[in-house]
Image (cartoon, rainbow, N blue to C red; front, side, top):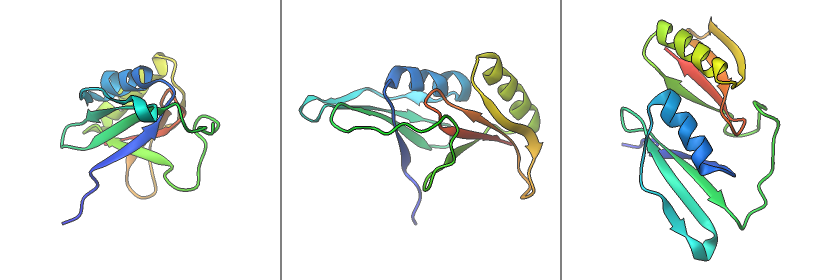
Length: 130
């Protein structure tokens, strides 16, 4: 049986991005990994239910910037379910109060989700869903 094991995000600041997912989504950080020979470091974040997100930094690749919240070809957002509409509302307010952009919602979508769309510190679109 196939399942998605993890998703990975490049970042210029592992600590800053990790803190966002720990603070707002209860992610549990794993041990830091470093490979000095490849100028690479990463950290896995685990969420309830076993989903994992790998936050990575490199000194060898020229990473291209995109406008915060930009729609991109390929992987364009990460959806995180928080359990209820009330939790979507509360977390959206908390993230906005901390200075992170809210792009949409909370609202009910045409396909039945109750969600908001926020932007993490690196400009990645995060759907908060019930």
